[in-house]
Image 1 (cartoon, rainbow, N blue to C red):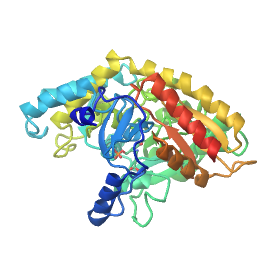
Image 2: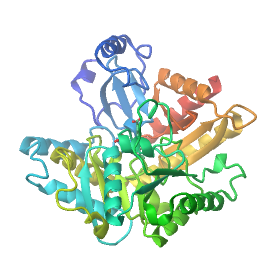
Image 3: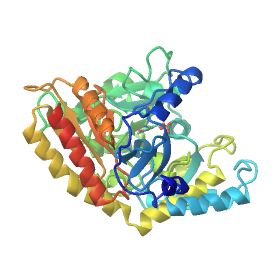
Image 4: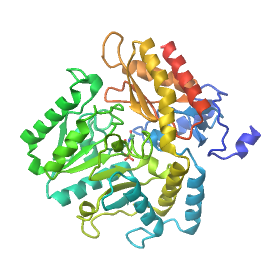
Length: 452
Ligand code: PLZ
C-alpha cells in the first residue's frame, strides 16, 4: 500500500486488475453517503466507486481496488488518464497563465489547436474552427453557424441521435428518459428522420441503407421542404443511441442530398472522433467530407474542450463577436489537447484502435454464437458493442444488460451500457490499454455473460 499511495496516476500506475474489498468498498460507501447528502440526485453514477487515480488501462478507487477501464470516462481518455504529454503541456500552461479569455486577449495554444483541427479533419478545403467547452456547446454553435450561413431555420436529426443536454441539444436528442423527461418545452424547428439501423430495420439489413435514405429524404422533402433546412446533423457512429453503425451508403446519400440543396452537412464526431474508430474521424470510413464537424471528449485527454471545425466560408458567416463564451478554448485545455494530439500521432493511436478491434471483435462474435442473449455485435476500432435481446427474438433486454454491467463492476471491469432501449453493452477502452489487460477484461465479460 505504501508504494501505491506514493504513486500518482497516469501511465506509471500498476496495470493490473485488483480487488481488495467488495465493490463498492467501505470508503466508497462512506463517500456515497456524503454525495447523497449534498450532490443533487439528478447526477447519477454508473459504478458507485470513487476514483483515486487512473492511467493507462486502469482506474483505481479509494479502497485500493483497480478496475480495467472499458469506458474511458465515456470515450474521453483516449490517450489514457494523465497521459505524459497532456500533463507536461497542461502543467506548463497552468504555471504560465490559466485564463485571459480568448475573446479579450488571444493566445497561441488556441490557434495551434485550430491549426491541428484544420490538418486532421477530413477534406483539404480551407477550414476554420471555433473552440468551446462541452460537446453540447459545440453542437449548439454548429447549428447557430449553419443557420446564419443558410438563412434557414430547420435542423434535421436522426432517430436514436444523441447531441447533449442543453435545451437545443435535448431537442436534437432522440431518447426521452433520462435526458428529456420533464425538461421541456424544447427548442423548435427540429425534425427527426429514420436512420439505417441494420439490426432493427424491419425489412432486414440488405436494403436498409437505401430504404432509410429514401424515407429520410422523402420526409425532408414533404414535411419540411429542403429550402427551409439549415443543417442535417448526424453521428457517423451513433453513440448514446446504441453504437449504431448506419448501413453503408446511407450517410453518403444524405450528404449528397444536403449538397444538392445547399444544406450544411454536420458530422457530430464528439464520441466517434479522435482515433476512436480506428481512423482519425469515423467519417473517413465512407470518404465523407462534412461541411462542419463537431469534436470534444477525446480531443483534450480529459480536460473540457470542444470545437466546431468546417469550411472557412461557412464558419466565417458569423459576425465578429457572434461566437464565443468566457471559457471557450481555455488555455490549459488547449495545451492538454496539443498533448493529446501529440500522443495520438506519436503512438499511432488509430492503429491501436484497429488492433483492439482485431483482438476483441472475434471474441464478441463468438459470444453471439454461444449465447442467444447476444443479438448483435457491431462497431469499429475501440468503439465496439453487443446488443442484448430476449432469447428467441429481438426484444430488447435491458435487465440482462444492467445485470451484466453490475457483474463486471463487481469483478473489476468498468463497463458502460448504452442504447435507446438500454440494452447495449459498449466497449470504449483507452487506446493505450495493454493487450494483456484488454484480454483479461474480455475474460471478465465472458464470465459475466456465462453467469447470466
Ligand atoms: N454529441 C455524439 O456522445 C456526449 C453523454 C453522457 P457533452 N455523450 C456522452 C451523458 O449522459 O451526459 C455527446 C455525444 C455526442 C454530443 C455529446 C454531448 O457532449 O460534452 O456531454 O456536452
